[in-house]
Structures are given as structure tokens and as C-alpha cells.
Image (tube, rainbow, N blue to C red; front, side):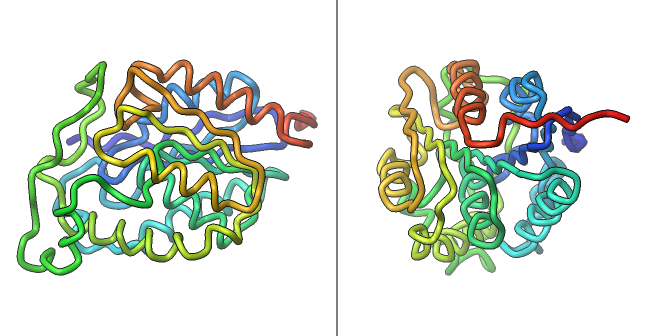
Amino acid sequence: MTPPIDILLPGRRETAVLLLHGLTGTPLEMQVLGQRLAADGYTVHIPLLPGRGTRPDDMDGLCWEDWMTAALHAYDTLARCHGRVVVGGLSAGGTMALDIALRRDPAALLLYAAVLSVNNRGAYLAPYVWRFIRRWPSPPSDMVEPNDMLRCYDPAPVRAMSELLTGISRVRPHLGRISAPALVAHSRGDTLVPLGSAEEIATRLAGPVERLYLDGCGHAITADAKRTEVAEASATFVRRLPDVGLPEILSA
């Protein structure tokens, strides 16, 4: 795979948005969403997370904290130049967004098919076998509109799943500490992450929650058939946040 560069879309507002892609995906999964938010004037950064976009071997030496170090650096960089930062993520990126909320103070969360559990029960063996079994086939895509540009590693690095489970174990007990407003979005047809994961997040977060449950798309809701609907709902959610839409950054 040719590594995609980070996507950075400059904006004029004081609020910035950090978007995190999925477990073995790339920033292209979040591009439509990022462009929609940028059209409203928000600076949007979609970083390529460590080990992604190259080859599966590059994830074998990385742990959850390596991923989080990169995400927190991206958050802090935006926070130095903007008064508020909204954090969003798809799938494992949504789990990372929750972890950021435990360590920083985001203005809001955009959670797209965020993972607290997975449908494939065999995935829970990953912490015990990844040192001996490095790869296993990626699950079949459930995308309604497949896109060859949205390539994930196949076969998948087993350690990556192990580290996602580590992240889940870190985040899940502390959801009640997160008070940032949240958009919790999920596909009812998601074959990878159960809808119950979204319900648990929405029920246990301490702040106000808006739910967006979709039909006619698969797990990667920011890139599949309902991507435009997801982007529009996200833009509306961000626009409604107290003090997030204004003021604009004034140019000299």
C-alpha cells in the first residue's frame, strides 16, 4: 500500500475537529465527513495513525499507547491554535476518541460505530495468540457500496485486535466520567460491531447524547452508502454545540 498523507483542511473558526480512522484503515475513511465539516469553516485534521497505510508488519511492534500518543499529539497541536477541539472516530478510532476524552477536555465527541465489543467471538483470543499467530483473514466487508480506495490490511495483524481489546478495557469502566456532548452513530446492519456497543456508550456517557442509527449501510458508516447523511448530521450536531460555531478566527 502507498501510505496516504495526513488530511489537513484549514478553516477559519476557533473550533477544530480531529478525526481518527479505523483499526487498520486510512484517513480516506473520514474524508467525506472531514470535507463537510471543513465546508462549515472548521479546521479538520485526519492523521494517518502509526503502522497504517503501509504493510501489516508495521503494526506488529505497536501497542495501544503508541496509537494514543500519536492521537494525543494531534489533539494537542490543534488545541494550541484553536480554543476548542471536537474529536471523532470510526470504529477503533471511536474507541480512541473516548480515551482522548478521558485524558483531555474535548468540546464534543463524534462516535461512529465505536467499538466496545465485536461480533466475532474468536477475536477475543487475540491477546493470547498474537505472539504465535501474527495474521488472520480480515472479516468480509459489509459495505453496501464497496470502494477499492478504502483498503484495510488483509490478512489483519492479530496484535492490532489485541491492542484494541486493551483500549476497550481501559475505556469501558470509565465511560461515566466523560461529560462531553456526543453524537453516537451506528448502522443497524453492522456485522462487525453490534448495535449494543452504541447503546452502551449512549446510555453510560455522563453528557448529553444524540443517537443516529442508520439502515442501508455497513460498519464503515462514514464511507459507505449513507456517508453524506452521516456528514450532514455531524455538521448539524457540531453547529448546535454551545459556543462551538462562533467566533471565527480573524485574519490580520
